[in-house]
Figure 1: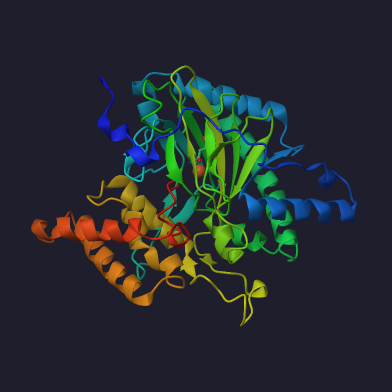
Figure 2 (figure 1 turned 90 degrees about the vertical axis):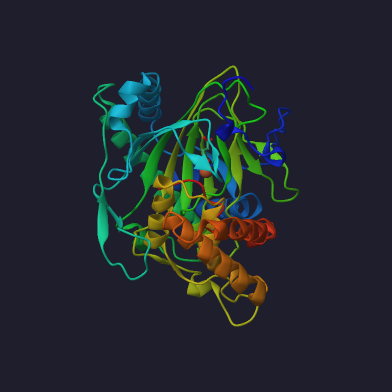
Length: 414
Ligand SMILES: O=C(O)CCC(=O)C(=O)O
Ligand SMILES: [Fe+2]
């Protein structure tokens, strides 16, 4: 393996196959009916989007209204930024006090990603809870850090974000219609948005069969709108058979996927689907996801209009989006000595309605102990941690995939 740090190496069962399956099945949807006032065409479009959300959790859109030059400007700014020296990029490195900016040490499920990122929030400042503690009402403000080079980097980023945000609202409205709800049913949640944009850079990798650009994960927020370049590498786990399918790069298209919040809102009608990114030894790759997220104070729960007392009972408890984000921040800056800690600390969010109650309570109790120990720098006797860690991992690994948590599968985000 030469000089490759073992932190990048995936467990055998998660290593990518170098032979790629490129399926045609991921829907390609033309959004041009939105430019007409033909309500039938818009209704048909909503149905098409609803089917894609149900069957794939992913789709691509064309004729989306984001000007091409706006996209080209941010793509070129991103390329110029990342080709600088580490020393230059580190001038805007993210830290505990400013979680936005440049970072090259992200881990997904405790394996390091073969990538570098630059993050910025859409609304300045963005408010999120200061801690994950339920009783702590203090808020903190997220600000952006901008590099001085390349010039116009900030302008390119901000212009692009405004356009992708507009597109995200259109998509959200179509999703709402597809669920039989008024177009603007979800809009109120996004007033004080916690959305952010990420520039991803995947350098060439000498061990593409052992490492991943981003390990398997689901996106936590409401929607992700992603621009990928012509290199390709994004793979989606096909719902029908669990096969990893490559999303074919389509010039000037956007890849859209529903995140966990939409899954909860729709009470599982739409599913947030696992995906990952393969890297390669010949070509570097760039992508730009826009994570469209609600206000921190949003209580995320299945929409009442979609529920009844029979077939359609709520499958999730309500959870507070901001507290969830704050908990994610905690693990971003402290390397917890426990694998999959995010899964374990939030298990109740999704599985409480789904799994055997005794197993659930036991699992959560174990997880809570491990979590507390890890957060307090393992101040609980060290000899106690390994068996707990072992049990907790066994617990999370044994969950069927449809019972994994809203947070555990999520390795994106704040
Ligand atoms: O780079 C990509 O194609 C996808 C990245 C991704 O899934 C993410 O950043 O959440
Ligand atoms: Fe993702």
